[in-house]
Image (tube, rainbow over all chains, first blue to last red; front, side, top):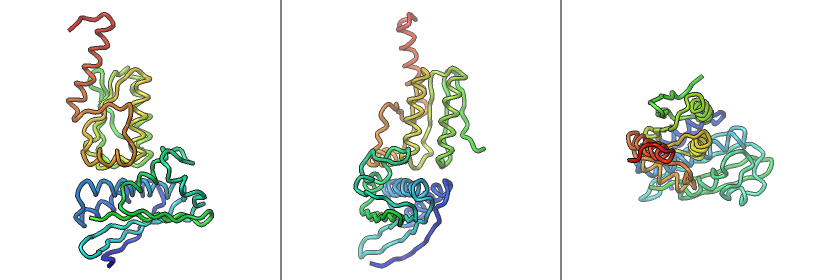
Length: 134
Length: 129
């Protein structure tokens, strides 16, 4: 699997959630994603970018355009150095939140992606990687 | 401070969201609308989201909050113009916007509110149609 393109963006404030939506849209459009797939990956990115700010206190987004034989993919890695998640399984459950949102962010982002990985340790931050293939 | 304009049309308030909203702007709109409903005694709120390319859980929650608050203030909210890709994504995300009325466009949304108001007046002893 080849990485065709890679870019890292900071996520430090609310305006960056909007900026993340814009950069993910640009990449998804340039890679030829359908409108529905663009909308899904942008929405997932919006949820995860907000989590980085609200729970992680800021972090980064790394975008990768992948080429895996016949298919192309957009991989987004959201990373923060925040307090981390003690119980990832519970955090993924719809309706569970330690903030004041709806508790749909993580589980929703998972449903909107083809691949979803989360790695988190208390005190060491959180890394969520999603991939959408076309 | 950045704000989304609210237009008054008869008994209705019309909001057309044309920018990619950050969270604080969405919260400000929610507060502004609630205040305007109370101040103008509006009976209906139409929110046009046809220019929105995504609705995530935060914006979805704002729409549901506006609908609930306006109901408490005796006004009906109709969300109009949602793009099909947004609707598909919203449901997959896990948000079905219970309690939020929707219509295809502003005209149909206004008509929906008009009919609801007409019916309400009818039950209060107004002329039957």
